[in-house]
Image (cartoon, rainbow, N blue to C red; front, top):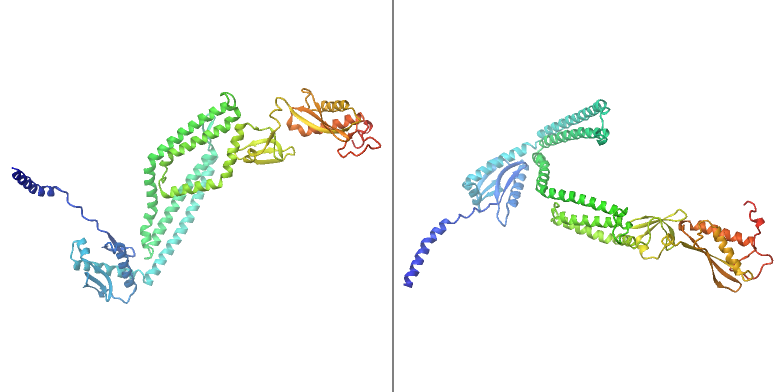
Length: 530
């Protein structure tokens, strides 16, 4: 029973095998690599290649042999013959081999090799004859004459065209320019008359440019077709012009869906940024408040949020940018990233320092501050630098990173609520009662404009030296920007009061009492030219 079952299965397989084989699709015909042999612009015949000797290499070798024979006018075209060779039918010009017609070439054309060789001889003879005729001196001089005539005609046409368009523009200016009016809706002007006139002139100039390009293209195509060395360029000139335009057009059509996506994302981002800007403006003007959020933080915070939103959107639309996946685009992106990272380290540190100072609230615009040796009023706070105006009207530009790493003295922070303490020192001898000195210094402060009466000025005795006492006057002011003038007025009042009461101000270099006290009596206070 088992043997019978195996016999039935084998019989069915033998019968089904041919059926299955018959139902298979026929194998596709192999693709044959062929290249057309040309002499100048004229195509002669195609040749096929093999893996070791490609069709391009074979066609180039045949073309070089034909050109060599065509340039040698001593070779008669009647010497072109087809003889049997080792590999196939050889076409020769005398002893010079031109091409070997292989059996594979004949199979490609579905004719015998000898018939195909005769066809090749006919085409080669015709091409060489035309090649030689077009390079005779008579033909070349005739072509030069036609080209010169065409150049002269082109020059005349261009001159007439330029004059014609100048006349058209002048006529338009005389007839229509004065009558043009602004285009708008009620008080809203959409397009001014001058802009409308410029638009009209631009259209006229664009038409002139198109006509000039058409004329130049026609001239080049016409002149290049005269000479055999440039005839192929003339035949392909239209293709050379249209191919880039066609490539751009097809690329734009392929990119159109991505462009629509990018435009939608950009429009949405624009309105989102407008909403964010409105919110931070409200925070800056205290129309909206958040606990712990200072109004001066609104503008820098808006810049940070805007930058983050823009970076996020760029990350989203990056894959939709044309050529984003190309190695060139990636290489340029990496190069720009490296250049930015290497060249902007100091700039980034200054930017970070600028934002850090803003949120630290170290100072604000209008404050009188001192950074190192620079002292002045803050006039501008940029991302990279801070501008100060000194009391001498000098502008000092300080990098933010330097401010962040230095000690900053702000004369306005506490002065707004408690006042800034101005202080100056005098040295007075032990023979003057200290209570008198205190009173004179306090009165001098009270006479000085800009000194506050509350809190009251006070005097400190800083030290007891060998020959004098070191007194320090401290007085409050709420005008830090006027420190220089207040100090000057304070020193003047101190001198006047001490001279008025005959108290001598000792010099730190005091050695002994002078014969006459070093004071200025009131009668001499206004000595000439005062």
